[in-house]
Length: 252
Image (cartoon, rainbow, N blue to C red; front, side):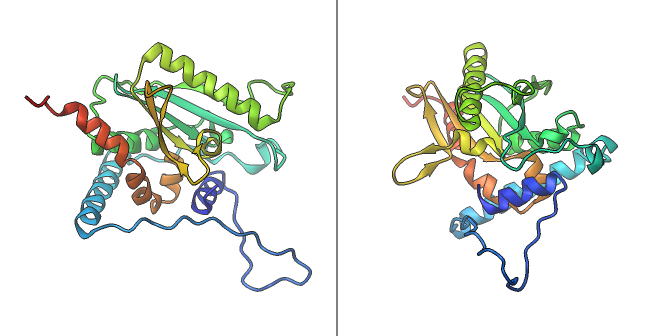
C-alpha cells in the first residue's frame, strides 16, 4: 500500500503513526516506504486540476458543514482487538446512474458510523466529473469481510476475500449494468489492482470491456488527508474522459 494511503487509513482509525527521529539501539532496519511520486503537470493542466480540486473542497465545505457524530469517535477500549494480519473491510455500494456505480471502503470499526461528510465529498467529486446524480438517493448496499465470525476458509484470507469481493461486484453489475465502477479503496486496493509484468493499473477494462474499474483513495482518506485530493483527481482522468465522450454528439 502507498505510504500516504496507509497513513490516511491509520489516521481514520485513530491509530497514531510513530516515526523515530534518531536510530534506536538494537532496532530493526526501517522498511522501504512506497511514497508515490506526484505526476508532473503542464501549466494548463495544473491550473485545471487546481480549479477542480478547489471546487470539490468548496462544495464539500458548504454542503457538509456538519458535526462529527459521537459514533465516529468510538472509544478505543470498546473496539475489538484485531490481530495485525487480520483482513477486515467494510464497503458501501451506490448505483449513481446507468453510467456509473461507486464503492467506498470505510474503516471496519466505523462501518455503522454516520457518512454525511463522505457523501458530501462524493457528491462534489461527481459534479466535478459532470455526472448527473440527481436521481440517486445515496442509499448504500453494504458488504463486509469476513462474511461471518470464525469463517472457515480453504485458501488464504486474501484469496478468499478477493473471490468474495469479485463475486459481489459481478452480481451488482449483472443487476445494475453500469458502464463504470469507481472504487474508493483502502485495503481492497491490493485485491483489485490490475497488475502486469511492468506496472500496476488503476483504470482497466473488465470482461472484454463490458465495464471499467477505476481505483483511487477512499473518501475517508481524503477527509483525513486533503492533500490526497489532487492525486485522486489525476487518477480519475480516464474515467472523466469516458464519461465526457458519452456526452459528445456523434460525428456526421
